[in-house]
Every structure is written in structure tokens, then in C-alpha cells.
Amino acid sequence: MLDQLFNSKTRVAILALFFSDEDKSRYVQEIIKLSKTDASNAHRELGRLEELGILKSEKKGNQKYYYLNKDNAFFDGLKKLFEARLAKAGAWEMMEEMPNAYPMIVANAMNIKIANDFFASIGIKNRFSSLLTVYENNGCFTWWIKKDFDAIANEIVGRLIEEPKWGESYNNLIRKRQKELNKATDDLEKNNFAEFSNKELNNIYEDYYEIYENLHGRLHWFQTALDFGENVFSKYLMKYLQDNIKEKKYSVGEIFSILTTPTEEGNQAKEYRSLLNILDYIYNHRLKDYFKKTETRLIVDGLSGRDSKLDAMLKDHEKKYGWLGYGLAGPGWDKKYFIDILCSLVRQGAQPEKLLANIEKEKNELIEKQEQYLKLFEIDEAHQKLFKMARDTVYLKGSRKDSMFRSFSVIENLYREIAKRYYLSLNQVRYLYPHEIGRLLTEGNFSAEDLNARIRFSIHHSLGGYEDDVIISGDKAKKYLQKFTFIEESFSDIKLLQGDCASPGRVRGTVAVVKTVGDMAKVDQIKKPILVSIATNPDLVPAIKKSVAIITDVGGITCHAAIISRELGIPCVIGTKIATKALKDGDVVDVDATHGKVTIIEKQK
Image (cartoon, rainbow, N blue to C red; front, top):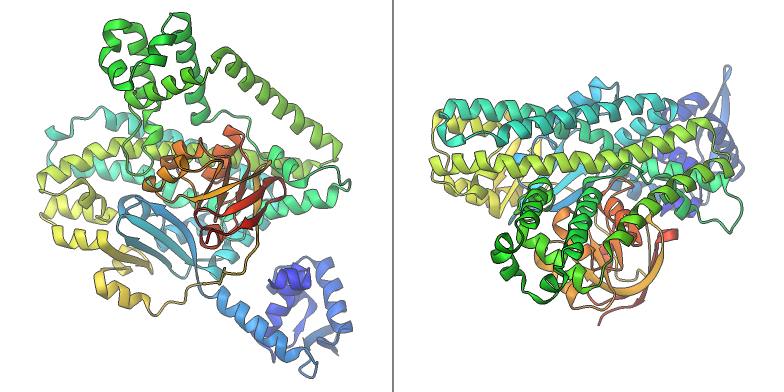
């Protein structure tokens, strides 16, 4: 709000600094350093604030010092505004809501010792003071203190802007760590866990988890800093384009989307290409009517006898890509799922050769447009590197998560073996924390009731390593949360939502708020459904494919919604922060994704 009121982030940052200690005077270089603003903008804004009488200045030796003018007519009003801003900055802000997430995959990423050790290793000075995770009925909500994350994100993006090669080195490290996790997953898949002793199972788990933690517990913070919270990196690149594109006929949002879309093919695109090749085989071997007029269940049962080669192709496709549907907790996509998709494509009259040609055409057009825009808008070499960094980060965010999802689908077999030995359910094992697996396997039983309590409602307040963290459940956890201040806003009078363009286009439709797999049925009941979610995930892909647009609360150019919307070519607005709270099922909205705007046309009564 203050950024819009003053129309200058530099001015807001300087005033926030002064109102954080209203009796203190500061010299110019100190102001620039502490407010994290650039020198030229800071000098200009300090002069304007003095002209307005909000600040005064005095000479002390060779230094010019500024201080707040408490006699200014606007002082009391500004003080209240900035007190509210500072209180909000120190409050807890939701990072992400994740259905079906559980401690075994979240706890290491939300452990401040692991996070802060990573920041130290890459030369970042800011730190988290604590991190919070809340689990409730198989849902997971992650929180950070806003001022902590904002400081970390600004420092990382600031260094990235100054040293693009520094960022490139960490993208290269992410590629390396992904390969290590993929190999570890391949090795796990070969194991017969039933033949190992408890000690051997623990050793296998620890070896795997160290590799997983290196990727997800540490390196994910580099990507998260770029595009969560205030979406600092995206906004910096958007601002650069706004300053360089003067002609109104060009849409900054659309150009931003094109310049940040990767040309490397992700696993979702590879799966689609492979499925189209199978569809082409169906057409060329006179199986079109069979898939058009036969129930899926009958094809599943009878395909091996009718066409063994096609059956083998589908089994191979399931092995290569079925894990894409696994997400965090499964199940993955099986042969029946893929046959059902193929039947649908046949009934729609999809032409595989034409669709495959369009994939290549769209990829080549994207590359051509990227080259064209870089020249047309005279994007300098430093910012060309930053846009490449953005493209690589978008691709790697998707591929990093893919490597994780595949590993989850395989490590489930180890969890099942542990569950069997200790008379626990798979879900109960998932609610153990990483440091508790070894204790269970070497020391004996873990209370099933305690695990059930964690599933119902529990928190992980990370204050250091696991030995220092607060991990409690039930009423005790709810009472513990009462001391926290969470950022809350009112949304009743909102008519316009502002976010960022992930995939351009404009469409009008009806809202379907989809947070979980159970919500996806809403999409089938609506004409021109617009899927609204906190943050999309692979579980929601079937509903996304039926939607005409996507709107999310959180995420930047590297989020799942941005990646999948570009692959499908549907409009997508990300990072609205409030879409799931301001919009309800049945609301009619106009999505102008190119400009990052969502206008509420009609509210559901």
C-alpha cells in the first residue's frame, strides 16, 4: 500500500528506516547502506523529503545528517502508517500451503540450522531467526518472519544482479545435485528392502537423505529467495523492461513471459511428446475405433492380447513417466490413466503429427522471439545474462521438483517396509522427522498415537537444529501458536487483484477454488473454469488441463503454475497473495494475464 501511496520504493525504504528509530539522525552513506537503496535514488529522495518538510538536515563536521521533522503536519499520520508497516514486517507470513506434505519431506527445508548454514556457505549475511511449519489433517502450512525473508531475498537478488556468474554457479550446482538424487533413486529402486536388517535400512536411509537434503534442504533456498515473498527477482526484471520499452503497442508482461520461458524441454513436455507418439501408433495400426468406442477398463484388460507391442509401449511409458503424477504422496499415474487420456484424445479427433509439429514450431518461434526482443529492446549484456539466469531457474525449479517427486515414489517402498516391521501405517511413518527414523530402527517402537496426533494438528517451530526445535501436537500446539502474530488482511471490498504474468493472454470465466485433489471435481461442473489455488502442484494437473486460466496466491516465474501454464499455453496470473481469500467458487472474473490483472466482474451471492 505504501509503495503505491508514495510511488517510490526508495522513499518508502528511507522513511521506514527513520521511523524504526524516530529520534536518530543519520548521515547519507549510513542511510544508503541501511535502507539498501542505490546512491542516486537515495540522494534524490532525501532532497524531496527535505523539500516536503518531512525530513530536516544539519551539518556535523564534513557529514550531512538527516532526521525526522516532528513538527511536520504529516508526522503523526506517517508514524501510524509506518508503525503498522513495521509490525507487519515483523509478523509471520505464509510461505506456502501444501496438501499432502509431511515432515519427512518438509522438515529439513524448514530447519533454520540447515538454511542458515547454507546462507553462510554462499556468503549471505542475513539469517532466519526461526521458521514455522503447521500440519493439520494431511495439510502443511509453512511460515517465515517477513522481515527475515525479505532481507535474505533482497541480499541474494542484489548479489545476483551484481554477479550473474555467481547465480549461474548455483544453478550448475543444482543440476549436479539433481543428477546425484536421480542416481540415488535408481539405486534405491533396485533394493529388496525386506532382506535388510534394521541397521542396514537405517544406513540406506541416511545415505539417501543426505543427498536429498543437499538438494532440497539447502539449494531450494536459492530458488525460493528469487521468487517467493515479494518476488524480488521478477519485479527487478519487469522494472528493467518497463524502463526500456517505451512504445505502448508492446506488453511488458508478455515480453517478460517470453524472455523468462525456458527452451529446455521439461519432463511434462517429454511425457506429452511420448504420449502423442503412442497416439500416432494407434492411428497407424487401425486401433482408432477400438480406443474411441471401448471402455478404458476393457482396454486395460484386453490390450496385451490385441496388440502386445502397444501394451509394451504403454508399460514403458508408465515406467518412464508415471511418477510425474505422484507428487508428494502418490499414487502415480498408471497404465489405466494413460489409456484414459489416449481415449479422450481419440474422441477429440486429436492429430498427433500436427500436434508434434506444433511443439517444434512453438519452440522455434519462442527462440526466435527471444532473440528478436533482446535486439529490439537493446537489452544489455548484463541483463541478457540475468534473463538467461531466469530461464535456467524456471527450468531447474521444475526439474528439481521432478527429481524429488520421483524419489518420493521410490523411497515409499522403504517407508512401507519400516511400517510393516513396526505395525504402523505408511502415513504414520511419513510423520516421523528425519532424525527419528534412526531412533525407531535402532531403539524400537514409536507411539502410533503420538504420530496420529501429529497428523491431526502439530507444529515444528525451528529454532536451531532438531535438538533445539519445538515439535508438539494437539491443544499444546494450538496454545503455543497464540503468541505468534500472523499477517491478516480484509478482502471483502476488493474488486481488482494484481499479480505477475506467468503466461500471457486474456479470458473471462468462472472461479473454481482448487486446493486439493478432492476439489478438482468443481472444474467439471463449470463452463470456462478458472482454476484458483494457493500454489498449484502436480496432483492438480488433470484439473489445470481443463481450465481456461490459472490464478495463484504465491509464486514467481519458477513456480509450478508458471511452468505448467506456459507448457499448456493458457493465461496465468501468479503471486496475487490473496486470490483464494478474495475469490469464491462461482465468481465471474476477467483474467488479463498479460498485464497481471484479475478483475472481479460478478460476485457469487
